[in-house]
Image 1 (tube, protein in one colour):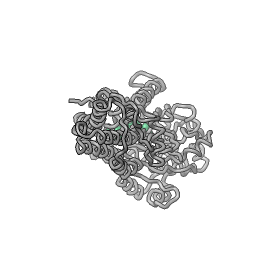
Image 2 (cartoon, protein in one colour; image 1 turned 90 degrees about the vertical axis):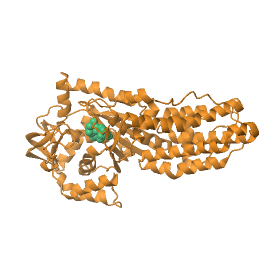
Image 3 (tube, protein in one colour; image 1 turned 45 degrees about the vertical axis):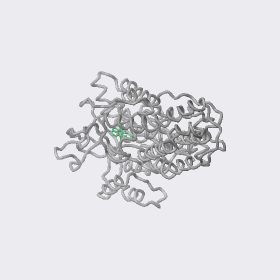
Image 4 (tube, helix red, strand yellow; image 1 turned 180 degrees about the vertical axis):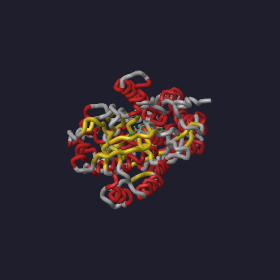
Amino acid sequence: MKFYITTPIYYVNDIPHIGHSYTTIAADIMARWKRLNNFDVYFLTGTDEHGAKIAEAAKAKDKKPQELCDEMSTKFREAWKLLNISNDDFIRTTEQRHFIAVENIVQTLFDKGLIFKKKYEGMYCIGCERFFAKKDLDENGCCPFHKTKPILQSEENYFFKLSSFQDALLERITDVNHKEYIDIQPEERRNEIVGKLKLGLEDVSFSRSAIEWGIPLPFDKSQTVYVWVDALINYITAVGYPSDEPKFKKYCPTDVHLMAKDILWFHSVIWPAILMGAQLPLPKTIYSHGFFTLNGNKMSKSLGNVISPQELVENYGVDAARYLAVTLIPFGPDGDISWQGLTLKYNTDLANNLGNLISRTLKMTEKNFNLKIPQAVLNLELVKNVEKNLKETFAYNMDNLQLHKAAESLQDAITLVNVQIETDAPWKLAKTDKNKLAICIYSYLQAIDIIAMHLFSFMPSIAEKIWQITGASGNITDVAKKYFTNGMLPKDGFSVSGADLQIPGILFPRIF
Ligand code: MSP
């Protein structure tokens, strides 16, 4: 089975911040989880490099647009490397392969009579790279996202007959039994889209005559393709459209387009309409998470309150940064974050709960069994309880992109073992019943291994480290792939009696 997941391609007028990181880490967690479940995954991210916004940003810095794009696109690549993002491809809209795909799609739509020329006047927000109807502006006549006044633009452009797709879109978005059903998540956002769709669709401008920084229309080189159309097409360029048919057939349709609510309309209305027009497969799920604010404020360069991926990693380490970014607020609604909130969650979930479990288990083994896994039968009850806890909730929540809930069930499983340790009181057993102590420790280690396999998608390096510390045999991903397929514990457990353990050091030093 295949799984094709995408993030938005990010504008290169801004440096990567925690907002972009949030979506990218979430997509990475999904991609890793699906790989562990034996899916053939294609995980795409990249940069959106054309349009007025980028041209203006380059001009302000006295640079050529391409120069700015090269520089900024590299920053995104570096940020994703730092955050241990496992993308299979990184697309840039200034690449040759993308020009070919865009020209191909736009020509196809033109040949089908879906693109026509028209004079148009409207209010354009450069921040959003889109026209706004008066009714969609805020009470001050400003863009609801950027709070700036859109500019009046009047041009003769090519338009796409979006209005002719209203019924087809409504059917595909509302009828779960439709063979091309598009599942827009979460439900409240789907309802918003459906509500807006029912009000009717206007044709949209597909080209710009005044903007040179873009891909020229193949049938009228005096105009460039509207940046949003150019950008959306990246999702098929990357999987081989139009030249690599086997690859395209293998990965399309897209399984999940992930993004925040700001760009959901483009993905759930304009993008499917383009695909339908070109008779290409429609995405299966479009998932929009919320927008987060920092201490109640919108993050912005001008307010100087942007958290960078580098700062996150400096404070918490890569793995904890990944974990915290996606679990601090529920995945879906808007939420507010703060450094205090991040640190509190770090201390609670990682330093106290997980870190404590590993360190006390290892210390007990060091003290009583010279850091070797003792010979013992397994207390299956503890292992089964941990498995039950995770099986009931973890996979379901992961598959439904409820990452914060999946993380909660992981924490519950960790707590379960910590509580069991309190109940067993191994420090007393050390004096009274060494056999029972061996059984306990052996079982804690197996439980920790199961937890590590589930933790892997969130914290790949830490999970691998835990796997080594507990003396578990084989490579964690190979073992997890088997375990997630057959759900069976190996006969001798994951950490086998006699194996050497490693002193963990402090995995998560407490932060004050
Ligand atoms: N270039 C377009 C997307 C084209 S996709 C075909 C674009 N780029 S963007 O750089 O502005 O990125 C927007 C996306 O970044 C959001 O949809 C979201 O995924 C992420 N986020 C940016 N700031 C965010 C928050 N404050 N909170 C949550 N996500 C944020 O739009």
